[in-house]
Image (cartoon, protein in one colour):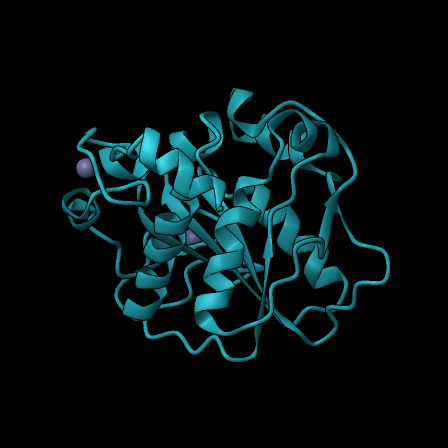
Length: 228
Ligand SMILES: [Zn+2]
Ligand SMILES: [Zn+2]
């Protein structure tokens, strides 16, 4: 017997946002539908929201930024907290669905793309037990029918979380040199989708995109579920 089934019988799941009991999953239908998705891209450099249909703001951006919904949305924030800080893995599924609904709305052709999560350092992965970005990226890739490469990028330096930094300058310094392409990985002429749970200043995506482009990646699309 599946342990999740046993768990559901004794502890019927509750919506992580409103607390209503639900048959399965992490979010009730009402809370899911309350989340209003963005319908544009953002600039990879200044994170400004781009006008409808536009993909360019700062021309030298190494990547295009997408974010599904605002982080100050209660239901979305509750999902991310449940996944990251309460270890409720089921919360990754609606987060992946929200990301998929956003890319569907933008009518992106993701055919020739490979999905990779922003990696955690080994220390943090060990402490948390999982990489929340990978848990979101995998079902997202599966829904798109495109490859998922969990360890395309590795984190080679362990520093403090970006959320503990004071300003954009410290964020840039803090993340610099943190990532490397995994040994044997080949991204030459490939299109890579980077996935993370939350984007704030975009410095983490920018550093990951820089490594990918240096290694020959053609295009990089950075997708966050939430934009702070
Ligand atoms: Zn709810
Ligand atoms: Zn810009």
